[in-house]
Image (cartoon, rainbow, N blue to C red; front, side, top):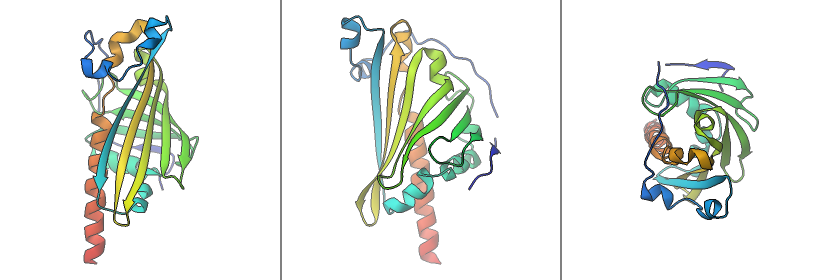
Length: 200
């Protein structure tokens, strides 16, 4: 378990406006919101990765702060993660500093809004900075560990977001690159850890 404070690693970049909205992004949007004169649009993206370890093993790191610690030690996605409040359960607040060039922003604060150990599901929402500074009114990420059989599972990552009509140019910012990278990192760690345990 992590002590409240800092997890460590280095950074700097400013946001820039995206002028073109790719067709594959538009396909995810509920464009009726614009047609009916509503002030924002909704989008959703998801990523799945199969891992040959039990669901309980994957949830052991996804359902705790263990994954955050491992990601900072790895240093490829986050420069720093600070635990501002909580111990990994619902209500925990983290401040994440991204590695330079990885996003159109450098820092955001997120809150764990749901944590269900039985369903192996965790949801978090950005509460300050990040996408909210780019005109998004909601940016939520849901992680689910879905049991496939006794020795394999699926890591499913889903992003849901609302963006203001006037900031629609930024709708192309969200993508699955980061959650895919996290899932791949978790997969490699879990398989390596399983191999070590089997060899012991």
